[in-house]
Length: 342
Ligand SMILES: C[S@@+](CC[C@H](N)C(=O)[O-])C[C@H]1O[C@@H](n2cnc3c(N)ncnc32)[C@H](O)[C@@H]1O
Image (cartoon, rainbow, N blue to C red; front, side):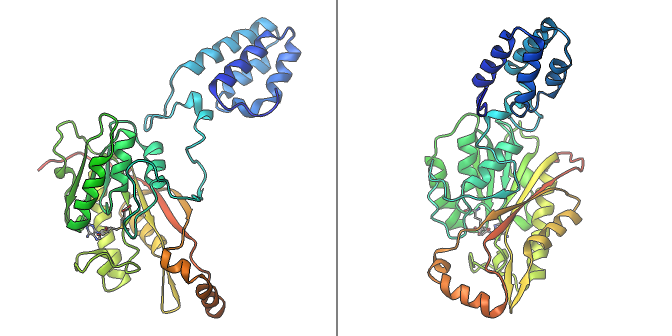
């Protein structure tokens, strides 16, 4: 067979072709030459390569075919591991490069400082199943909640800014949802919120995923509210508030649930303030286990794009590199969390 097998149908056709071969040598060489497309099926590959007769090899080929129609998941998402080759749209590398913002659904990208829908979408597909609960304590324009509806997940979004929450709610309500999506947007201060108590669904037993996209300290001022993390006087104060939101989110996460923090760094007085790594350390000190550091390309803001030459000059003269990336920190709550309702 030439080229790569992409779909389950191709794989089935390939197995049937191998089945029709008349000699064990031919079967072995066909399997040996296409091992890459049989990834995840190592058990059967070994058995077929170890078979001494055509009959024995065919027995394992039949079992391999059966296994392709069975559903096997890792228990935390809906990805069928027997069909892992079918999920071209799900990223497994740590470098995320999105050329364009996704414009499907009711996403508009109207909010300055929003993230692209691809970020929550990727996280939702990797770390949740249909019907799971997702928390976004810095919901802004509701990108996460719109994705929850599209993917059939339940979501709670919280933001300090009432005007933003009401505009976001309009967009969210226009999005058609897949059952059983139930989403709720609330105005509250996430540094002092008990997120579990905000969900009024009797079947709720904790969040499986929390997506935190805080202000990158004072790079964008989101409001005049002193509780807003973009108004904290120093990086230390910002980190203290960030720690409070991490703690509150962790308390509401299920055991083994995932916290993803989307954050970039900043410059201050010619000095780099590594907000990403400082926040990552804070999260680890709060007891979360680090699973991945994803680096995502950072599209220039409209303002910066007009000033690209100026930034290049500044980089030359100041001896630094212009930011083109931000982080998505993936952490896991390994602590046993019992859901407490007040
Ligand atoms: C970077 S934006 C999030 C954007 C969002 N991911 C989106 O796609 O629209 C950060 C948000 O955090 C909110 N925020 C800042 N401090 C907060 C706090 N203490 N509690 C709740 N929300 C807060 C701001 O109002 C702002 O909307």
